Length: 222
Ligand code: DC
Image (tube, rainbow, N blue to C red; front, side, top):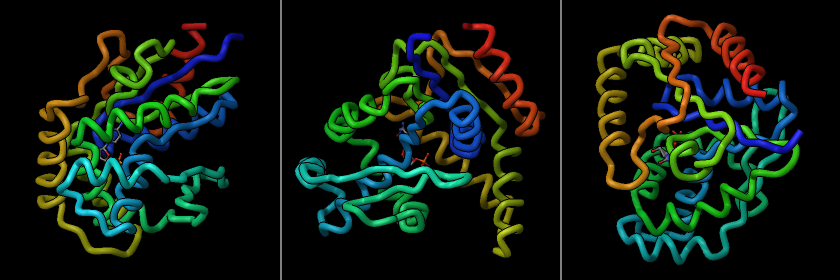
C-alpha cells in the first residue's frame, strides 16, 4: 500500500499523544510528536541562553539544532544534541517556553521541514495542533480529538494524584481553559479542525473505545 499520513490534532489533554502512539504501533508506522519538537527547540534556545522574547535570535539559535527520537516500550525518547532530555522537555518551564516559541511565524516555518521529514515509508501518525491543517494538509486520514475542558481537568487531576502530587481541580480547569483560548485564537496555525477531519468527542469514551473507533475509521478509508 502507498505510504500515508494519519494526523491527530486536538487540545492539550485530549489524549491524542497516547492514541497516536497506539495507532503508530498497530499500523507499524513512524510517529511524530510535534509538541515535542517545539519543546526541544525551546530547550535548545534556553540552553544557549537566548532571549525567548527575540524571535530572530531564537531562529538563529536553531541553525545547529540536532534532535532525534528513539522508541522505548511505551514512549518515545527525545534526544537533544545527543542527550536524552525526556524529563527536561516535560517540565513546566519547557512547556511555557515551547508555547512562546510556537507563537513565532519564523520558527513555525523553520520547523515545517523537520516535521515533514518524519513522513517515511511505510507511513506516519502525526499528533499536534496543526498537523491536518498546515503540516500535512494532504494527509489521507485526519482526526480531531476533542474532550470537554472539565473532563480534561479531571483526567489531569487523577494523573497528578496518582503520581503522588497535590492538585486542585478548579485551578487545573482554569489553566486548561486559558491554554485553549491561546491555542484557538493565535494568529498563526490556530487550533482548528481541518475541514476534512473526523471530529471525535471523546469526553465520554475511554482510551480503548477511542482506539477501536479510530482503527475502524482507518480501515474504512483503505
Ligand atoms: O502538545 P504539547 O503540550 O507538548 O505542545 C507544546 C507546545 O507547542 C504547546 O504550547 C502547543 C505548541 N504546539 C503547537 O503550537 N503546534 C503543534 N503542532 C504542537 C504543539
